[in-house]
Length: 233
Image (cartoon, rainbow, N blue to C red):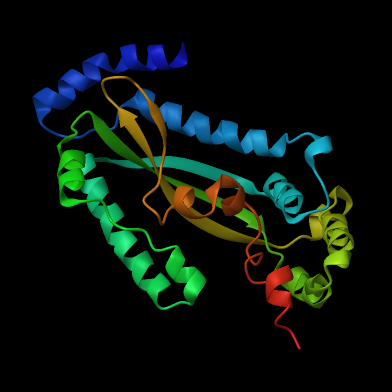
């Protein structure tokens, strides 16, 4: 029902888009995107207790709960042609980085779309892409993760380590926590004919790398984890 209302509300906007020959932000789409992101953040915060185990995902859920001053803004809207050009540029950069890595990195290299597919994508004037920006203050756990890093080497100790970090993030300790400010971006695609609207990945934004959960959780999990701990002397 929500999609139908969104589609009907935008019918006049589509006519204006065609008549004016430009791409403009439609208020109903902007509202839908902001509401969707806020809803996804709340869904993470409301993850049932029975689904929370002593692992890094549950740790990140707690970190999202502690994030504050979250602001979401839809800043721009671009055509399919502009979006595919951004995507191809990011794909080339990512593939070049992977080529410098080891065997497992090279396996992850993705072939670009064919010239025919690219041209077909560019011709699709029914779909536009809305760019959004999220800023927030998130928990800074650099010192805590670094402290527990050596203990992560033993897989049998991981549950206790995550429990200790969760205790550090308890409500009683909330006032002592340190924060850092972060900003990230992402895209939503919007089909002006069907009213369909959802996340789109340009390979570098929030959707392409960390998702909302990863973006609002503490930095450092990629640096301090069981795998990097194995390299410690």
